[in-house]
Image 1 (cartoon, rainbow, N blue to C red):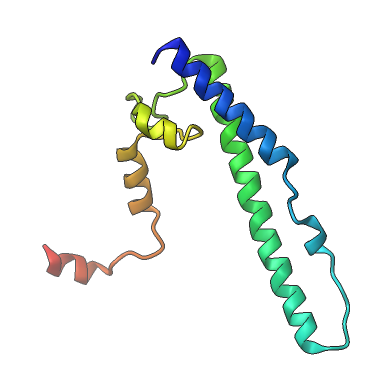
Image 2 (image 1 turned 90 degrees about the horizontal axis):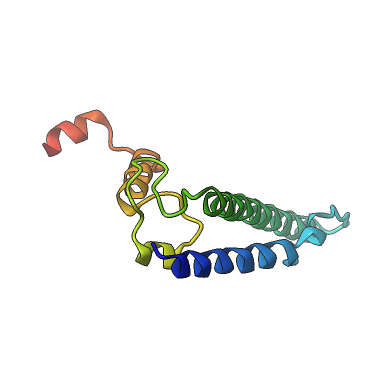
Length: 126
């Protein structure tokens, strides 16, 4: 990766970091409101759940962007954290905060997916 490309990625990461830090995170939706109406209470609870999910995603993204900026600083940016091969520039252009090449990311998603076929189904598929 050239110094020019690395500089562009660093600038994109810094811009994303600033956006995440300055974003309105919806913390006002976390306030617990009391209401005599059961439907209002349910709606407020759902809004709180959505706000908590948004805050979680924002916090995760902040960690990923900061970690990527640290990798830029220490010279390991663009190298997969798992297999230590270069991450394609095309992937980095799409997700500059990624720490994994596409092969390792796919393997991680397959291993940590929400559903795994039972062993008897896996054996019959072979």
